[in-house]
Amino acid sequence: MDEGGRVNPKINDLINVLSSLAPASADKDLIANTLKALDDQWALSQKIAREPGLEEIIKQLVGRLYRVYSSLAALKDQRILDIACGSNTSKAPAFVFVNTPFGEKRLPIAHKEGYTAQFEPWFCRILLALEAVPVGIDLGNLETESFEHYHLDLGQPGALDFLPEHSFDAVQDSRLFGSPEFIAQFPKQEDRLRIAAEIWGQEQRLLKPGGKVIHSDAANLLR
Image 1 (spheres, rainbow, N blue to C red):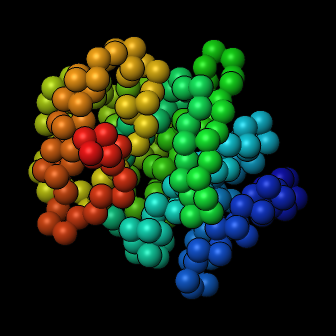
Image 2 (image 1 turned 120 degrees about the vertical axis):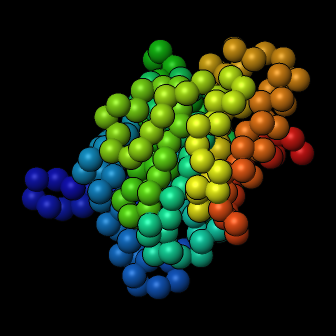
């Protein structure tokens, strides 16, 4: 919002689009409040203006939550693990695919030094604004973030062993296997498959009975 308390038009447009997913007025309010909070704290509208693809990323993330939870209000107090959550220092590939409730897109990414706002930890930020309890795992810098987070190399065996079993209501892993850092570290497909198998196994171990997989690139790769 600007100094006069007015909502940025880009944020207003995104609120209107995502509100079409909301089954109840309470969820429409949650969408509006969440996006306003992201704009106030993380300059979402400015980053969308520089990188229009970020808008599609936000749509994808909110769409995933609706697909699994049906209502954003249901996320309150849910402890959710985001593996490879993104960071403030994540490098970006040349492009990324997004699949939102409004269609699939291939987003080109071309920024100096490989940095892109599209790989900031938006999912955990959204969850925090919705009063969930996000836990982020990433190799990049998360020091300025308010959610619980851990700096880990997910390519190392047993990296997630420190987390207690059955301790999460939901899990997600997204984009680890396409990140430039990961591909450079593990150029062989058999190594990436081995790591995917471990992450998928860890996700099953960490979920509470009846827990939800919001999205898993590890499972998709193994398929």
